Image 1: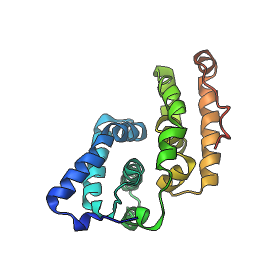
Image 2: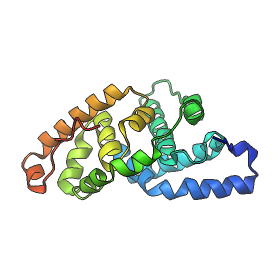
Image 3: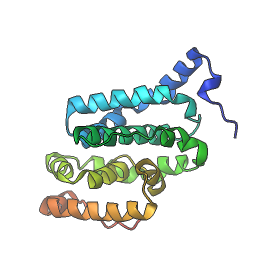
Image 4: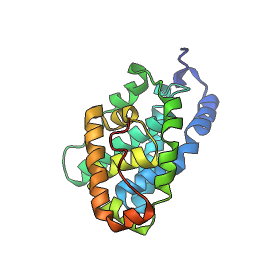
Amino acid sequence: MSDQRGSQLTKEEKDARFEAELLPIIDPLYNFAFRLTLDEDDANDLVQETYLKAYRFFEYFEQGTNAKAWLFRILKNSFINDFRKKSKQPAKVDYSEVESYYNTEGNDNDAEIATTSDMRSQSVQELIGDEVASALNSLPVDFRTVIILCDLEGFTYEEMAKILDIPIGTVRSRLHRARNFLKEKLEGYAKTMGYNNEDDNEE
């Protein structure tokens, strides 16, 4: 496949591609940021930081690959880095991981991402009432994140593994536990709304 890097583009071409391919993802990106931070201002700051980094490293984004997964990974790394700063731990963002994400691994799951989880994503989106949102927000961030990525955003296990930098087996285990925690918190409400976790082992 031809690799058209941002470094080969004029600034006008880069800006046009950036606007066309990445800006339409701002709504799901903000939703992800808000579910992680649980704060509107922090979510806005996180999204802004993500787009600044994405623009800076846009030359490493390969046209035609999954822009949403690329942005979500940058946001996730920024979120982790911010937590480390607030915890007064050594802050480190591994930009090489972001830069090499689409250079070292083929990304042939785009059609699968777009089709395999749409119905599940839509059905769970419809359940995000106050009770579900409260239960979801109460989960530890690692479990909250996998629910968001899989059930709300429709990423495949392979994409989630790349975004979170964890093995697919860990994705499956964490998602299974997260759904069980969520189900326990919702209990009777979940049953009345038809929510279940029978697809825990679904590929």
